[in-house]
Amino acid sequence: MDIQLIFRTWVNALTQPGEEFFAAQRENASATLSTALKWIIAASIIAALLGALRSSIFSSTTGGLDQFVDLLPPEVQDEFGTDVETDASGGPAFSFAYIILGPISFLIGVGIYHLITTILGGRGQYGRYSYLYSTFAAPLMIATSILGFIPVLGGCVSAILGIYQIVLAYYATKVEYNLSQGRAIIVVVAPILAGLLLAICITVVALGAILSILRNFS
Image (cartoon, rainbow, N blue to C red; front, side, top):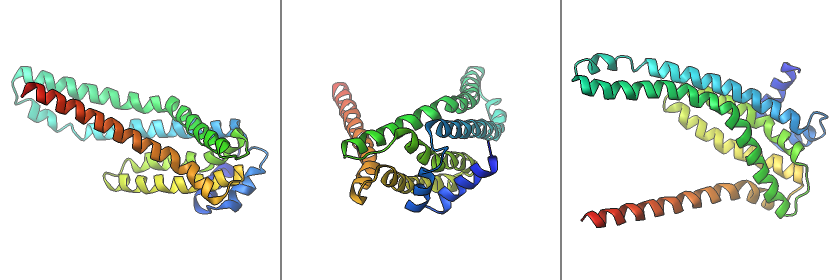
């Protein structure tokens, strides 16, 4: 595994977006599902380690709370102690779970795009498309984890990178499946709109349930 070549490919994917880059990568002999999974798994491991480190750092910054807790009654101290211990142990555990969740979510996400393109008449290979997608998904996964160390600003930049990932997905989809501009846009936007619609439906149902409960108590 040529680390330098991989790093250069990731950098080019992020800094030279466009159809030319993905068209060239499409002809790469290593443009396979196997390569994509190796990159995503590696990025997931790095992201998990960074997440565990971030949880450890931010949990240690709350250590000053212990002095305040010591002034409280014993029964209240027990409640605080339980919460703190749960948060401290749960953070790293969730981070390491990303080693499994990362690749799974990647395969599902790419699979959804592949299904939509097939419905729209696109012709391409799932494995090769996975590789094209991983050229920017893997480095962005690591970059987002690093930005997690920066309060507020890191979240804002991560949101911008999320939008940028959609743009890169558009180019990769258009090239691999030989789609028109309009159909490629539909492919990358449809899952987002479906997710927003689902979130709205869940919110409406939840609010309806809450209002119904409040009426029963009134």
